[in-house]
Length: 70
Image 1 (tube, rainbow, N blue to C red):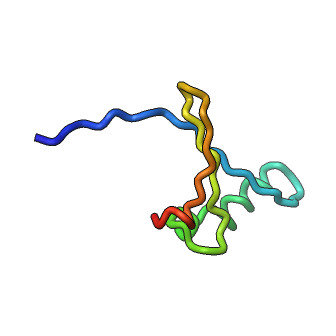
Image 2 (tube, rainbow, N blue to C red; image 1 turned 180 degrees about the vertical axis):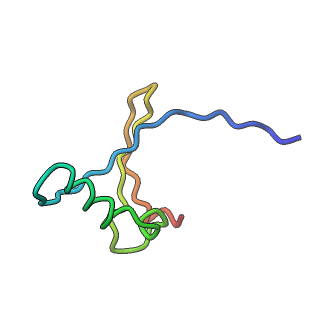
């Protein structure tokens, strides 16, 4: 019988500066250029640093996936 692990709710934030003609275009460019599989797996030279906040305690930590070996 496997044990069930307790989970915690986190806020994960990531920011990028993008020049665009409108807010909608900026969002589309961010999605097209940045949210690719290589980022999620921490490939070097990708924007893979996230600020993660425990929503219950408010404690935040920066997580660099390129250093985590994910």
